[in-house]
Length: 318
Image 1 (cartoon, rainbow, N blue to C red):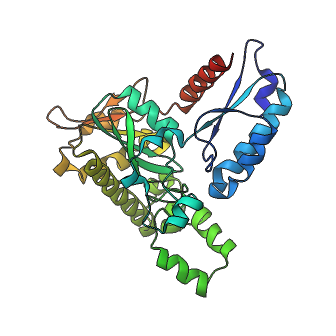
Image 2: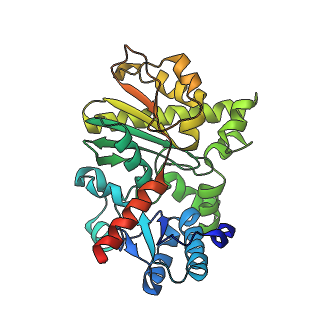
């Protein structure tokens, strides 16, 4: 926020990445007081993201009151997911009245990756502090691992990912308050909970502790399973993308995930994987020449997608 003091005069708008728009928002929207109030109602659906996003919106609007501010939503790209993938097996009241369905997240990142790696059947592994795996067919999302909230799916830095709902009910009944369970699932689980050391993959890779090895093994196994599931949604696999902090920088994670995907035609070039520690431009191909599936490391650029969406919205409203 301190950098707002140095905003150049030629800046014409501010784009805000908002993870969860709740039932109300998917498409980009001009932010006013009413939009802020409605976004506040969705904070509980993504507390790690929406609360700081709203704080940033408040400060940015105060610092730059004469500029239009636009909220761009991570769930928007997943609006094309078909009903069989988006629908939970719950009663109609929960689905229709309460809006319980798969929203999907990391959409800005997945959209960027799908634009950089054009393939009919693409799986994008967004692996960072939050992690998701998405199936993209001809540039459109058809399934993803995150669901009603960003808690579902593969394990993450401090989030648990998918857990048997029965286990959650058991813990609520016998061991934890609602607040305690929320804190455990959001802040104390994932790689941190598995390792007992850290949620940072770099620290785990540098550690010889058994917990660190377990955390990385569980993480890469679950990501590989998710890639297989997304390949099923696509009925095949032409390309696989690794993006975001862990996906871009961890040679170990990429290698461990791809090692489990040989049956899908994934074969890494180990030297290329080692060199691609820093993704640049539109991506670095790390698959072997003989691989049936192209594997690419892509630098995440949600900022570009958000800026583009903001410009388009303002042009439509001008």
